[in-house]
Length: 194
Image 1: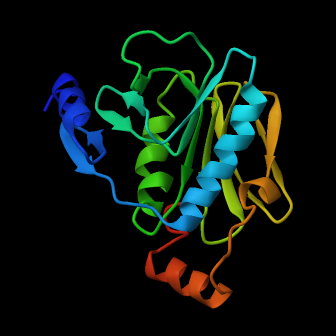
Image 2 (image 1 turned 45 degrees about the vertical axis):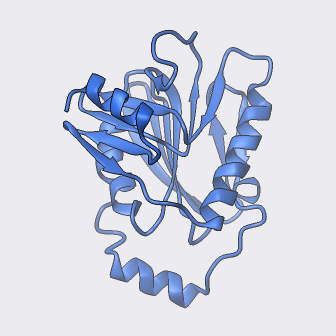
């Protein structure tokens, strides 16, 4: 289907879909941990953006990575005036994805590659919901660089003049035992796609 057909289909659908090369893929539900993390990030960024030129959206607005990819990130920031379809961000400066078992590989490989094509994007965060770890992909002088932030770290957020500490991101989140996290990471091949 074309992008226009997809947007019409999506508007009428009760289930959210992402658009990948002409096909619509249904999105699955999340967990309480995923919801808590997303809410924590959104609340902090929304407060920081108040009164400024940027607006923060949470998982109900599509981001156009390119002509062939439209995704629903968990949180996104756009710092330009909005025009056109209000359901689609065309020029986000920050995109945040909170991983799940089903999306971990897509977030770290496919979405990373496609989000990097967005000219306005300065920061792509991949937030692990199984342990205190954020992967930061930052555009610096036109080049992308990546780093893992763990423990008591913080992530500076462009556009809204704030940082996200891991304490804020993971406030109220209970993690599974480390043995479960390690077994799950091995099962899903984590590390191969980084």
